[in-house]
Image (cartoon, rainbow, N blue to C red; front, side):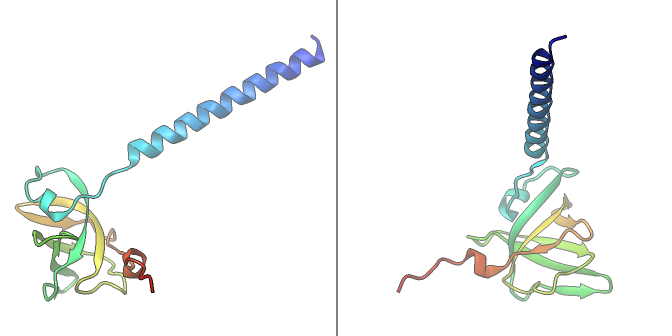
Length: 132
């Protein structure tokens, strides 16, 4: 077989493999993505489904009980809130008024967070810049 023909065949095979891998990567990244829901959207959620919830911790609502804690999370812009139970690692910046992301499910009107899925967002990243 001609060496230039072999190179073309290898090039086509390598490019085909690269395209297939890229398509597979794009598909898995989009299919694995979940959109975060706010508490007002979860109040009417069907039980048994897993969600990623985002919102702000309601001031004065944090109650610790042994290895677990209870608190309320409200919409970022609004007053609708949902009670939350969580047991697991708590990030250092977790406190009243802080924006969080938590994975879990709604059971009996309470959002039950999965252990070690609590993430606290840094407030400085989400504040509007002031123009002086």
